[in-house]
Amino acid sequence: MNATAPGLAPWPYPLWIAHRGAGHQAPENTLAAFRAGASHGYRAFECDVKLSADGVPFLLHDDTLQRTTPAHGVAGDRPWSELSRIDAGGWHSRAFAGEPIPSLEAIAAFVRRNGLALNIEIKPTPGLEAETGRVVALEAKRLWQGSAIQPLLSSFEPPSLAAARDAVPGLPRALLLDRLAPGWFELTQELGCAAVVTAYPLMDADVIARLHGAGLRALCYTVNDPAEAQRLIALGIDGIITDAVDRFSPAASGGMLLD
Ligand code: G3P
Ligand code: MG
Image (tube, rainbow, N blue to C red; front, side, top):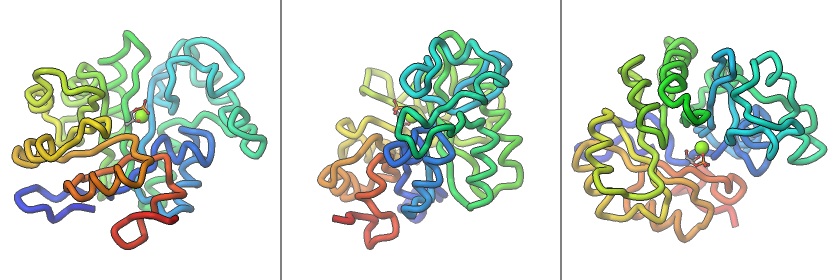
């Protein structure tokens, strides 16, 4: 945690964040992946959330089901009663066969009961950007009521962040960037974001100084290379999203390497 950075408001999230749960050790975006990350000492997690046809927020990265389940087609076209019965674990390995697609509600129960922090990436089915942002924010508010650490809502989609802001202004938001297009900084401010999460090659001393100078936090995805992790930590990065939960130990001195 980088809560004491000079001139910056406290930041409640740990530095190390397991990507898609811990989506290499176990099937991504399932409860099993969260358990795997927690068993490696991770206290913060990122996951991808979209809406079922009947408006239930659930975890899945892709728009479609075929990469990570035996089903096919657009996930958001199906009601939650169908999605909740699909095997999201067997594709990864036999040990996880039958692992279900989780609702955001199920993940909230796990992270709250275990005192973990969550970064919810709003990953809308195309065409549902604003609706997904609105519903996810309202559901996050309901599920984390009374919690000391609120979830961080992030998205590549500005309309999702704008709708989340309008629905629940008090929840922290972060703009995800896979390139630094002209106007990215102004857009971050317009959306009232507390942080920016970039692809890690984009993050350098200038970007971090600009963000910190405006009171914003700087995070990166998806850092699996030790040299890159060391570079970013030396620059003062506030969050590192990683798949490599078996290589990077949040508990180790400086949060670094197991090998
Ligand atoms: O939230 C950071 C990262 O997850 C963004 O990329 O494609 O893995 O969702 P992706
Ligand atoms: Mg993601």
